[in-house]
Amino acid sequence: MNKDKSSKKTVDRFLITELCNAFVAFLFAASAPVAIILSVGLSGGLPETDIISWVFAVFTFNGLLSIAMSASYRQPLVFLWTIPGAILVGSALQSLSFSEIIGAYVMTGILLLFLGLTGWVKKVMDWLPMPIVMGMVAGVFINFGLDWIRAFADDFLLVAAMTFTFFVLTAFPKASKFFPPLIWALLVGSTVIAYQGNTELSDMNLSLTLVVPKVYVPDFSIAAMMELVVPLAVTVIAAQNAQGIMVLKSAGHNPPTNAITSSCGFMSILTALYGGISTCLTGPVNAILVSGGQSKQHWIAAIFLGFFAVLFGMSAPTVTSLLIAAPAAFLSTLAGLAMLRTLQSAFESAFSPPFPLGGLIAFLVTLGGLPLLNIGAPFWGLVFGVLASLLCERIALLNLARIK
Image 1 (cartoon, helix red, strand yellow):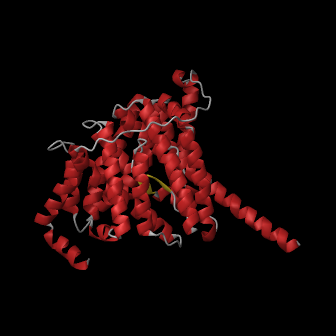
Image 2: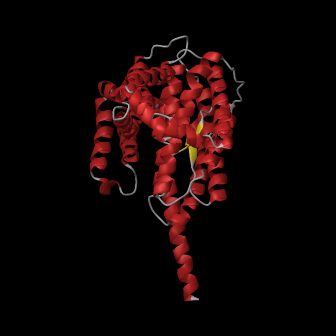
């Protein structure tokens, strides 16, 4: 009898651990990444209804996918959306309609589904020159870092308080045992906003409103597909899924690469019809899930998180309206701080051997933002980065081909 009680207590303790890990991971997913969606959508001129449908799609459908995949494979497989891809879309919205971008989402999903079903995704990952890809990613991400710095001029107290909190807790990780530094920065920022007495927030009706999603008809334009399909697929496969797979492998799991890619493709097509960007296996969220507890219980945490995501997606109107009413400096700071580590990794990879020149050219062309033939700069960043390496770093490229 005592043995049964002890066993039940052990199970309850593990479930509490997984629930806590899931909640912390959910807070991370629902904070800065959502702020990035809002920043991209608002800067691209999207109405609030489109942004609400976007948030609904990427949380609700990907939450359901996370539950299904984690339960099927008995390991944590949390899917959300490609953050680098969202930033790519921000620049594309300057020249493309939202319907054209949704058409590119659908084609990206078809490409991912094809790569996963055929098993070619591993070959694609092996052949991609990662410094050049990361050069393009750095060129896209850097604007979020610059927006964070510029936000000091708009609201010094708010931005300084959030930044100070983030860096102090990053420097002393034991002080942020329960929540990541970014969550504390969000809480401190919210406190400062309350102290400042933001009139838009105080006048809001914060009653819970359930979503009424929009269904979109894709417009398959050549310009949108040329600009977005390949870069979006690259961000899903190389910048997101690869990171998530490595996180899970380091925790002792064996994530199914082909099934992950196929699932990303299928769900990318579905979410696109509701305005959501391409699906990916998330790195940071899965890292939080596997940071504690027993390895064989991690999949339970992923299921908890999936349910949190579905509930969050269904209440997208309330959450989106609340964040839109917050000061622009708050969103810029939250997004900028969230991008710091990723931007750092992108720079380290882009300008390191064996393709530093190709990475630099990809970075500069993307940062320059000049579209050619009505196709956005990220695509040309990849093209000219590869061309530069073919001309000036061809020995390294030949060695890469020989190894593969």
